[in-house]
Length: 496
Image 1: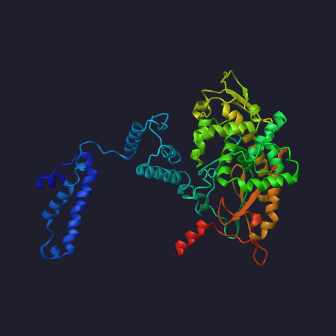
Image 2 (image 1 turned 90 degrees about the vertical axis):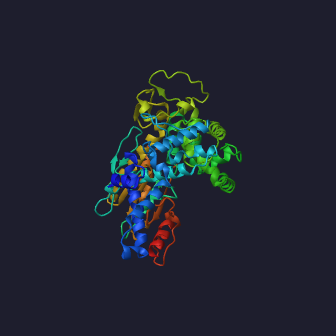
Image 3 (image 1 turned 45 degrees about the vertical axis):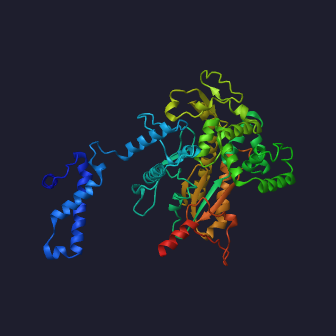
């Protein structure tokens, strides 16, 4: 039919590869003309003027000469690659990663800071990376095949990885983004009918693990002194970094000094400054170099420059002096002298991908609890000293909960956080019990550093939920559980 029409009406035949998209468009234009003739009564009185419809369709096609191109159509992926290559050619300072096997350029939503740094505004890349972000969320976290018949999920846990941690699959419920305001995926998970979803997690427990590992191995730890004094380690280091205070902790044993210090820090250290310090506290114990720390900070939304990253690294090491000894893991073979005054390997080598591990198995790490991880990279050897220790304590905490009879109430475990369901009548009795069992378990691994937990309660899994101790009570003395604001707005829109 297509070829016959092309010959009869003498319009250009399209390349075979274009027929799939052009022919439906051509037929659609004919149908549009039919609707037009039917609406004005022409079809009823004279019948459909097919020749006029085809003529108008041909004129419509002639208005789009790009559809007549002889080149094969360019799909989104190819266009994306050509577009990125054009950006690289026009912006010599732009650096983008490539896939190892195919060598294709990579740009995801978390990498768009590279464009921001150079003042590059590109609506196509904004849309494309957002689309890829949504696709990843759909396939990883929103895949309907993970749902059971009653709309629940039963993830599969692996209880021991090389880091000492656990993992989960189908879906990876331990890795669902916590603070994505645009896509608050955790709010998909809600309490069973008639119950409250409680989440008890340890406060900066990896810093506690780092402090314990250093204190046991070296006999001292500035981080331990800060935490045991009752200071917020993030706000305290932010104060040191911004030179609001000195790192002098001689008054840490005096409750009055600690109280005054906390008041001062809360009044003078902004949330943005605390967030920067938090990035440093969670990055440098694992031996991040300047370049990698800058990259991970920007990916997580912390706006710093490369110069700031270098300053923060030096400030952190000079403040937490145990780092100098911590950054000397036991080599399996001669790793060479990298010439770094702090014992770091060069920034360009400080984060080795998993695929590279087999090529450079240089170190082993013996944890203070006797566990050993052998044949690992420099960073892994430093990181596992505290991450593996925390994972060990968290598993003991989970075991305590199981043996205490909470196995049917537990709904999820995320490294340092446990989720479980209770009725409103049970909150006051069981939450203190759960917290005590978790602290007891973690103290097996970390006996010399103060361990704290906090519990939030909500109708949904909400990182910003209210703490249990701050919940308001109704007339009967039961806690008032409010749904998250996002859910309230969603319910309001559904009602409308």
